[in-house]
Image (cartoon, rainbow, N blue to C red; front, side):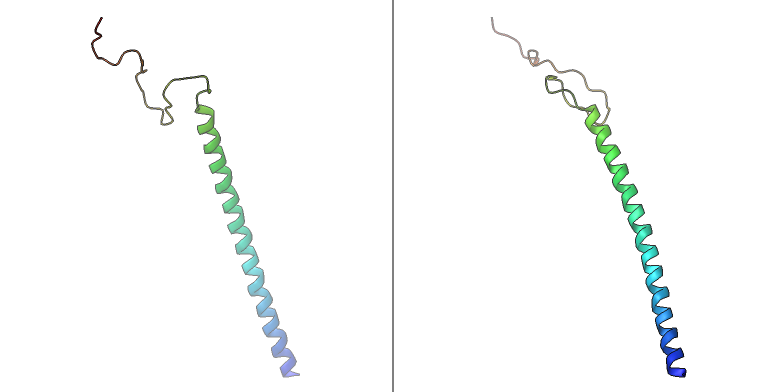
Length: 80
């Protein structure tokens, strides 16, 4: 009978360890899902700032002020 009680105790301990492992895995999965969601939001924000394909202006994803460039004016004197 002692062998049976010891076996039941070992099985109960293994079940408790497995239950804790499952809880930890679920928590880790939830954290990873939140990180993925945050990353998707950041990507969507960046994509929303992209100029349309017909827009020839310089791409500025960092939000810094950039002087508009004029390809016709490269500060070199013309020779007419």
